[in-house]
Length: 427
Image: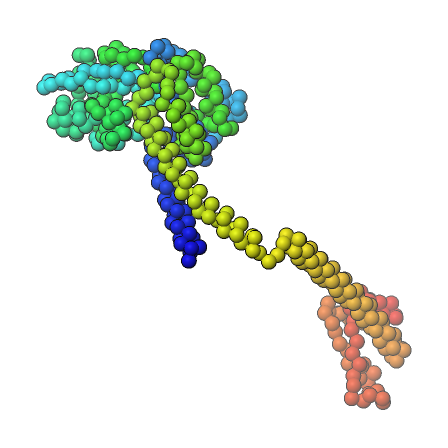
């Protein structure tokens, strides 16, 4: 009875482990800001890397552009080439951004909101839920676009159907290209999304708002070998290690990364760098901590049935009625019997082939003897004008005109083949 109870409890514990495993995998894959590599390439050979700079790092747009010019040559040196026939296809994409504030106004009211000044393909890495309109790109020639959240839309226009409307930032008109839903929840609010957020070009933020300069950079690029993208960016971006933190987002929520976080428990929150993380990185770090805890509980729930299995195995091993020596002898005997059967099979096959050969020789000899007897009885034998490829039988009574005195009821039959010479020399 005790073994049954332990077995049931072990099964329940293993079931809880499987549930926790599914939950952690689902939570990890649900973070869209960490899965740009999966959306960029389906073959799993791309990597997403993020860099976060301190306030005094001094990273500029020109430094970002200089770094971008080196990426293509690095990929060529790594034998990575564009395989798509689409002339617009790209091997990599990147984005940079800065935090700040801007004041938006229209004919009715004005609003001061947190702003993110973007450059490059920012919304490729941050696919926010669109309620109306569309995104804009930091690569656009025109810099007078903006995307606002639904709170800003209601405060400025009394509706979220405002794509195409005009707002003024620093007295300069900007077109609202889209309205997005701001991420919500306990983690989102704690990460800094507790007020209105708007997205403008980096140029607009620096010239018409307030900011501390570029403090985020993200890139998705081919990763021909593990760690290629991460190491290249960390080495070539040009920032001091004390002023930047580089994160490999693609494997951030992998089992190995979660186990590493367990080992860093207690020191992970200590940060000696003057880095202000953006809201999406704060959310990602919060989910990493949650997944770490779930992984720890999963290990504990898995350890119980594994321990029970080891105990049951040891008990069974102690009371088994055989030894490893017995297993060795049985395996050896089985192998020898198998080899002997194969040897007998080969011998029988060989004897069968030899018997078939002897039978064929006897048949040929008998035919030759019959042919010679026929020549002695008839004196000569002419081959028919046309001898078929198959066997042809000849009635000897019709050939000689008389029956054999010894066997009047039997008729001799002979086989002729093409190409065989008769006694007269005809073929």
